[in-house]
Length: 389
Image (cartoon, rainbow, N blue to C red; front, side, top):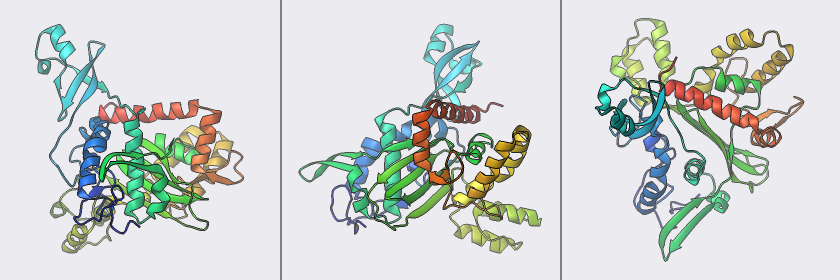
């Protein structure tokens, strides 16, 4: 624990400064007041967070009623690729509307609002230090927010100072990009409808401490926070959240038992047909914050039909699928969070291996696997954002 001293400058935290684990600009709701002082928080916001969150403006700008705790009405502008008569141009989009396309406007000599153009795709710059730093910072923040000993995280954090003033902060934690290593994960990620959410899984494994970071169910990475975890240490925390504001509780209609069950599941509360009691339960719940089980288990109904249609004739795949299904889900279709995205079967299926290790081995043996998965995920994201069918 940092004993409520700023982890960056070392000064006693005398004034609470709320640091978002996942950035507020991205709809992150989880906060901590035990990480840093107001001065360092302000530095991080200006010199690290702004550039990182800008990467995701095309997503943020396309989520109606994004759940945020601060600056709730701010709407970012961003670049998009648009099509006009079969040719692609770069345009500026804000509030769901194309507000400028200089090249096309000059060519046609008219206002962009009068031109029938449509958004074709968005670009995301991920191969840079800004992106890696932002992902690593989220993992670091989550570990700190759940009480991980700062000494375990110290090696990857580098703070530059001039006298007592912080001049630069670096998060030098290795990142491993996620790609599915078993049949169930392949279907969960590529065979189910795209739903935008954030999730985090912090876990110790052998002498290592990993954090799985998943932003918008598309930007997925393992962050190695430490390789000096003491033997027999067991760290396991998980977090998930939806990104769209839920309806006001007063608007609910529970004329049928089915309605009460739907609202109860949506808000994560016990169901009841008493509207007043249900509203009170909803008001007291953290409505957008969920568990990994709530996010993943509801995808389960999509797996069997897709699996049966595409792979019914492949008996080997059937066997692997049932094996992987039992690794991740219990008999009541709840997610086994001690295994999910932490362990995966070895290639021969006879044992389990570390998920990050399995990915590293796959990337080394077959680099195309990661490229194909990344392309497929971004294609799904662009299809959702551009509202393509």
